[in-house]
Image (cartoon, rainbow, N blue to C red):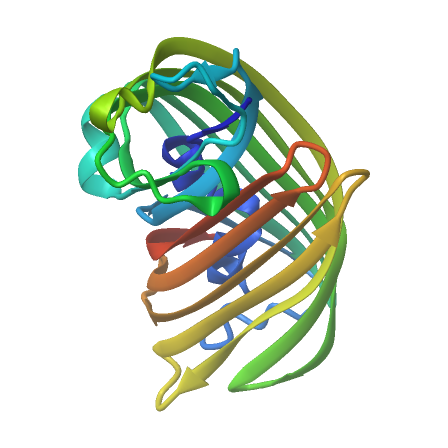
Length: 283
């Protein structure tokens, strides 16, 4: 039988994947970033998305009260910031950029570590897609996750109030997780408890665009970012759109970011969307 493993908490912070890089786009209202000198920025940030996702784990087949084997039970769950923040052990999120003229290099990295995280099960589907609505369930997940993005970018067009960069590079994701479950069924239809662990590691090549649009006197700006990529057994995409304000020392921006992963070999999918707050320091 195949049971779905909840990866949401970890991915909640998988933010990284490059989305916050948009916040480090050239500061058009400050010193000219295209003057040929080196310019740097560093952006610590926080992303608090709602996360949906599953990874299949092999566990012993379950049996009904009549002795029939149930081989196709899947859990579909969802978790948000109110659920995972109380079990957070450690989190680090930062992105940086170095620019010289039209060329730039950007990197983004995050590490997140959760203890046992109680998961909300939205539905359980049995054989032939049968909805098991009266199932009592107790499910928790512990996991750690690392996501790293590194890319080179080139400014293809810019003006005093906007810029457009194209980028290419790679993104790495590594996830270690353990699922613990306890299920009891309606009228004895389903009854099982156990645990399963899973490790995922993927390298993806990515390509995308990023930049800013500035308004009025240039203090207010709209960062944007989008990429898409693929690896040996998965594909991924990410998008960000936000609103920021520039100060003399740097920028503050609030964005909506989405990150998606789909693993073909492991029959897994991850969806994360939510607000991100970043503070960029420039020198």
